[in-house]
Image (cartoon, rainbow, N blue to C red; front, side):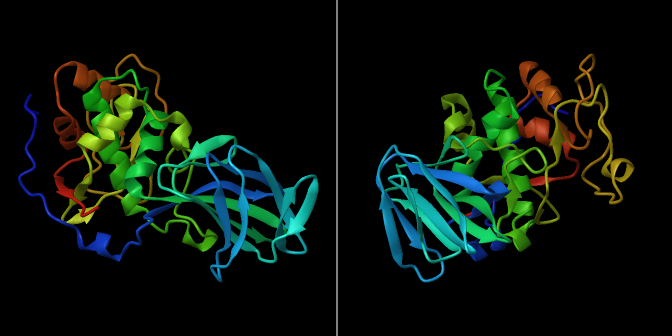
Length: 290
């Protein structure tokens, strides 16, 4: 591995991106809960997500309990629940600079809520790049080297794109937990990690022209594990390599990039693209159109 920043010799637009809607990622925040709370940083409109009908405008900086009533969603206003007449709603802020709230956190984009079997599922739908602002600081300490954070941003972007519609049968793409990728929304955003996302905007890891699910983990304890040894599928770009995290207790599945290893390599002077080319074998980089 050469101690130079690799250049993006082959930057191109991936055709898969043209098929995605303007809101590119749907994140499951709360799954099958009896009650939830919605809010917004500015007045925001609740719509019937099926008909598009405007149902109610909520006030800014106020929490609104919601629950299921006769298979429909009901909202509590001034100590009384009102049936919204639908099992599928959207909460959309007036401008892109406003935030919506759920799960005691702020989020960019909009919220989608649906009821099923008398339970609620709450989803955050937002552009991919804005989603990453809440992923990188949730997955890697913000105090770490900027090159490690940039490597994390590219790996997370690749993982998300490769797993679009992974959980589509439930109405969302990914969960907000380490089962997919940890995501804390706008509440966890940090200037340094925002910079790591913006400086790598649109960059993904590809193998033979296809975006890879760039698996990563906290630490391997000295050496990563090939995907074939960890799981049933042998992915040629996920080989066992020295992880540069010796002395750190193994934490995670051990496949792909070691986050501690990435930071240690960054502290030795290696750039984000060097780090990624090391942990993911025979890959190239591409830049998506948005």
